[in-house]
Image 1 (cartoon, rainbow, N blue to C red):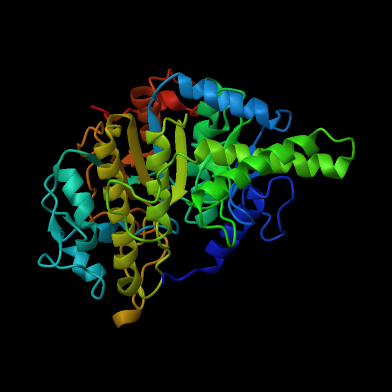
Image 2: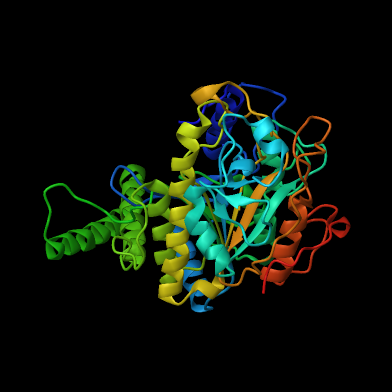
Length: 457
């Protein structure tokens, strides 16, 4: 497994605490910026007995029936462009995903970790770079013109803190005090007051990139969206039981006793959520996904989109962890394989369902790794760096390189890779070209200063 450095652990604790909206943050490091969405009010509805929950953020004054009506109304409006954000947690090593085998300093900087020409796969747009062997499926999509590659993405004076750099990417600004996400501000602008599915986290807590100030968004705890009852195996009996539970819940929801009323409302709400999601055939997708959490989440998302649920932005974390301070060769390949194989399956799933043209997926990490390795032999790893890599995947992705690889001859003042495209320029391009949104400084601060790359066909 990737090394879980102390700073990365503190960042994770802060984010998980922030996801428990309103419960406060642990006193870990006062210099760290608060995650976007901290303190946002939250309501939770049962999706699976004792386990999976749908949490709605920012809708404390709305009843569940109002949210149901809002989802149904948004669903009736038909398909709209969807952006899926996939985060490579921990700082993925861009110099391994696209290995600069054609650069003479590469084996000098990485005598233990450098990948060879023979074990890597050709990258058509730049012969000096080659794909990691476990990125073979992403390479396949790239050769089909469905992957836009950004080999050196970042920002000036890169902060090498997991927490701070990720925060900048999430809020779309170099602002430690930002409290709304870049996608959350977009939802605030175009979203509905009663459709929490318009911004959906699939990691079990609110993704800060989706944190809004006025509109509701949601998170789902786990990829299995069905109810289960011990000892009940017949579908007909289960259906009758759930209908009865809903009716009994409605009856108690009208009671004068506060306890009975609350219990009744929870039971009735849970049954209605089940009814809404019961038609999703998540267990048998038309594409073959890796059997792990990230793959199952993407399979569930494809089923939701195919069912017409009114999702505009979705966010989730990729498989594995990428904070590879040591034992990088022992962990990175498996994590890349699980992630890119799942993304490949997701794209094929969307294509077979006939909805691929309405979805693009942005794959990103908070920074890359330092070009020079640390440690020796099998223990070798890489420390926090600056410019990393990002990918835009989808049938409507332009599929052309954005920003050239800067080379290893001239590094930045911290001996890290220099960036050739700013992540905020990519956000501007997506908002304008994918969502057809006119930009202003509220959406992306300083947006006029960023040259938009062509990202969409």
